[in-house]
Length: 293
Image (tube, rainbow, N blue to C red; front, top):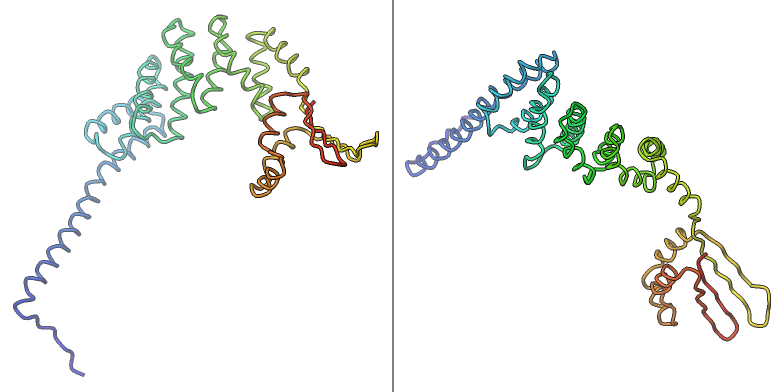
């Protein structure tokens, strides 16, 4: 079988030439991009090796050169972060390290994990500087007490609790109390109690007293038949579970109850606002009493 050879007519030459040109253009563009990225990747990997070998000063010099040569590189943000990490390891350059970390945190989209590490590093560095008499850095710790990141917020409070100067240590009180009252992690709660005992023993005593006096709320439901002294049904359940159960009732069933004159949402609100108030639901033969203790 003889092979057929495609012989384009003159009208197709320009089309083929155009397609070939576009193919070469995009192929060369991709190749150029890959070649262009190789030097900066190689330079950054060389810096990482210096960091691994703990050659901090040399790594800082290389990072400075990298940022100057490749300011728009996708690796530039990491370079800013690692610059802070290296500076933190060099004696006498803690303030520069804080500035570098803060520069990283001000970037448009820092990595969440690196951002958290930078926040914690700033707290550590600032604590050391304050301990050496540079009180201006207390704000670097105090401002993080209101961080949306609970790890950062808690760490700032724990660090402040170690300051010997009472006025500084007491800044940690609100967050330490928050941990004791709201945190579910038992180990964190214990650490916060120890820290609070260190800063303000009286505050810990008050908190423990309030906790012992605070009893869990209980929902009680009593169903009585008219003319009988003993209840037909008497139920006692924790309010937290009852609240969830009442709110979990399907909307269509709530609507049926509304049509019968029972508004579940209103009952929940009334019970929550007025503890001790008894809500009664009556018909011809039955009385239902609901209240919270």
